[in-house]
Image (cartoon, rainbow, N blue to C red; front, side):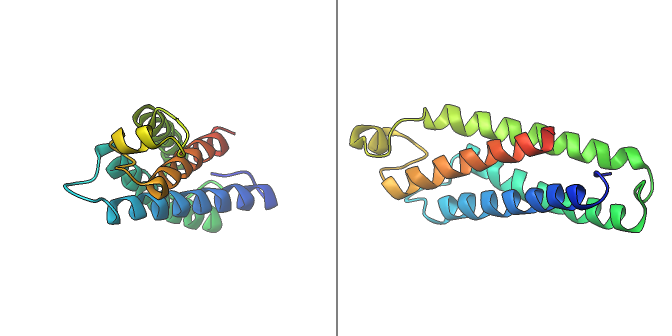
Length: 141
């Protein structure tokens, strides 16, 4: 269930936009991983974004056909709570892994596992972290 009217559609639209942005940024980080597998925090970001998109399709469809949702209305509340938890955990995991330094700091960029020696990866990871926090904060409302 989402708030009725325009506010509800705006909130669901934000969920979709934030999930797509996180998916795109995390996907770019996976695609540009220089060697080995991508770090687990980036893989988790992919999971968070895909989960948010899948639940978005259900919640929008369920809320469109019935104001109380299709099936159990509590399911929409549970899915939103899980999305909030997953975005929160992803934001914390990325912030801890990045240790939030300047991407202009060459020593930091070269030694961080997420940035893997690339300022572009550093900016992408910082943006993904920010949008994970944005996604959590809008869901918290």
